[in-house]
Length: 237
Image 1: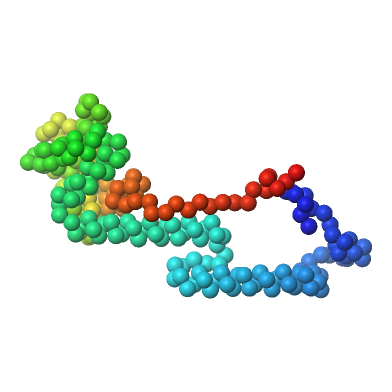
Image 2: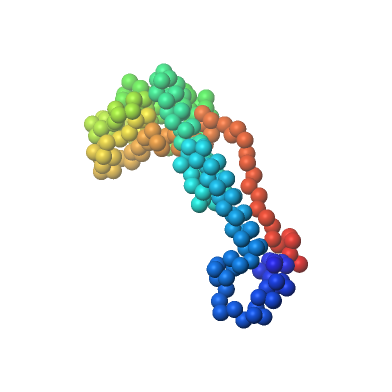
């Protein structure tokens, strides 16, 4: 039995067993003790109860997972559902909503100063193939040029759109740009962005929703769960 962290004292029951000099102490030998049988039965009941609860949830969890693993898996499921709902809402909203979303996200990430300033900047140069200009610092010494494409799933951005964006950046003498879409980029588009002489960052639907969750844009914290663990040091001498 345990007395404090890392310390155990043999019981009288254990002393009596050792006094008989058993050849080995294994499960077969322990089966002769009622206490061990009761322990195994209790474990089977607990595992069966956990398995039933997990299967009924339909989330694909297994009884072999620890409570911590179950909690993290559930959290991932909730977050993935949230991101899917966000994306569906963005795609069904007007283009102006998507532009405002980009503004709020960039401001939340530390760009553009205030929402008002960034809002004035976005769309200011739309006639030149650029959807927005966001200050990268408070003084406006460096700027990020933005292209935002609200596309449906499957309507992926190709290399031609990246080259057009590059041409727009060149006309504005810009050195960097941000291309945001609610769909995905083809492999050719990704390769084109990497080979061009200007720095072009690509944000697809998956990255977009991940950033929205990380910076609490379009979502809010509903409840905070505190996970507490047993403090063995507190109860030790």
